[in-house]
Image (tube, rainbow, N blue to C red; front, side, top):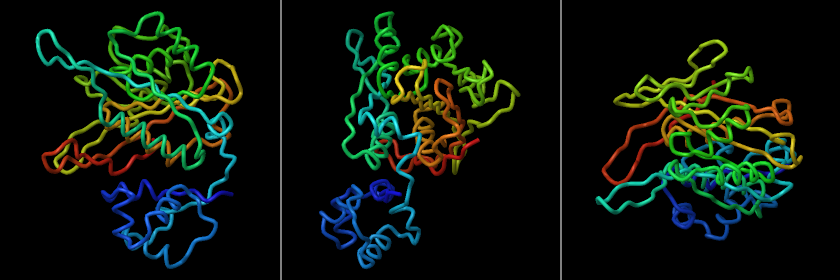
Length: 309
């Protein structure tokens, strides 16, 4: 068993940095840094009390949990100590002859927090990021992405609408032809391999749906006090029955905020060893509840919860 720190996420949740939280809790910054990194041989009761009070919680699970260090989902990351993130970009036209390439802030948050989660278990993990756009994802990029996913741990962030690598790799996993003209869809259950797709184009009431039964697993709705979004994750170890110590993860939402919620759902509800069969994709849908934006600076929406379907 290993002591796993969740302090960094809890600090961010109340709007602090590590440095400002140390002041807020009346503790040395080095103490907070050690607790965030999990470098704790024994838990000082006084320090624990100060941290809990500053967080406004009596739930120690928001600070530390004990976890089996041989978790099958994390095993490939622990063995290789490497991960590559694939993200999508889109161009924003600023003038008739000038554009700028952007990445959705929620996709960046998804990457950062998932990497933080990996570092809680593999402190020295090395990460790399590669970006793709729908306009420049040709045969060469497809070959490169497929070779990458067959050789090392890859985490794909974003729906096919913004990340062509997501749909291409999903298509390859399920032996489909990749991108479809009918719109951004992940028909993961189409071939009898469990749960979900990211439903229809947004104008047709999108959702996560089980294609085997036709059941709508997670809805997308707007509301005055909260909204719903749908997300899915796919995890497959030894994709295409390649190297033993690699895994491919895709994290997608109807919106980028939904992608972030799906990532939180994966962290909180990781697949167990019995769910991970070499070469067979594990799929899970999540119903994500989002609190509306407050204030006028940036996107201040907040993912309230992410429930597995």
